[in-house]
Length: 84
Length: 84
Image (cartoon, rainbow over all chains, first blue to last red; front, side, top):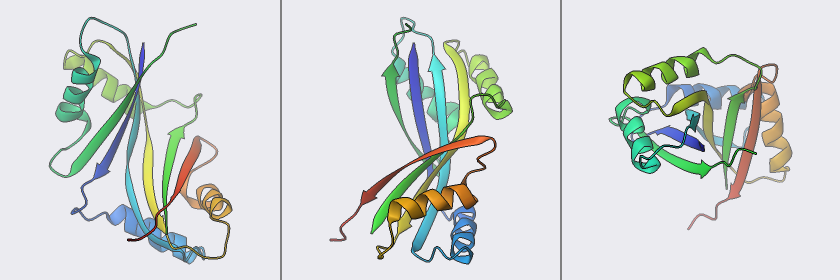
């Protein structure tokens, strides 16, 4: 079994209005040290082990469904879990 | 300056309809090895250095604004960045 952590972030050049709203709210709560907030998605996938190459399969999933590669970047970490 | 990565996930006991929808879509795309998907949020904060304890401040931000602790768990990583 594999546990896969996928991190999806907006590309550097893309505006992040949700992040700006959070920055403003944090300032209103007196957290003035906050300079910037960028908001992305975090997904945890549980995959069954099969004969296919898990790295290639996860990359395909990101490209086809999980990330919008026009405006988003993605990276992932794969960890094999031995069920006890 | 500090770069803070915040990971917000739904608590184990809370249903994740968005994750279920993604699981169904991945199955439709023939990724049958996917057993479960949980979707959370990922935030990158940039903080100015000041005299306050950054760990305590980030914890407060999570508790007060970033996470809904009734249904969500959070964890964070703080990294000091020396501007070059």
